[in-house]
Image: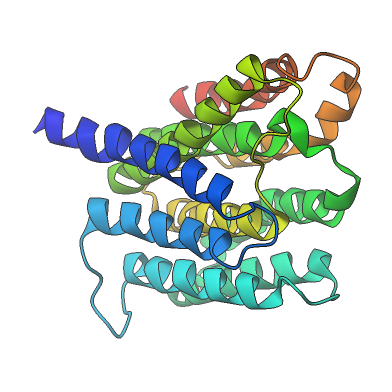
Length: 274
């Protein structure tokens, strides 16, 4: 049983991340119409691996999460070439996800704070994507931030007695980790060669997938630390923090950003555990 959990939660998603690196490196990482939907497909594969095939039409929150991951992938890929306000696109999709997943709980006044708290990581993530073109993507700041966000969310879910989605977030962290480790290895051996880095469209698909799962965690976990969710949103500031490290060697930047974003992730975990 434990070996199956380790394989499905860590090993296979990690391998998916390595495979994704080679897909991204082969298909021109930025402009390919293959790279972004492949990320969504692999994230859906991880979901099915852990939760099984969803029943359609969607009724439960877990089934709705599956539909939203697929829908967000399609929307982001189609909108990639549009000159629309991406600052608005991301929060609108998150608010739609909150409303659909939590529809049956909107009338419960005791749930109001849970809905409000979800807006914190939603706003921070949206703001960072709004500033995406001003960010340096050579230091793995986004992948490192998303790994911290996923790990923090996994422990928040675990301490909130929502084990299934704790595994899911852990698997997402392993997926991005597999991709990032190969990129970092390339940085070490070939520092003068531009490594594979993810486009804004791909990163939005990954972030929205994580946010969709986090919405289900916050709204349906038996117990949840709302202050931990607020602090967890600070992990998404990694790309903003990396600007301070642009003068450092490119191989040092992911480590420095990782140390910074580990602080709010660790704080969120500690608060959830207390």
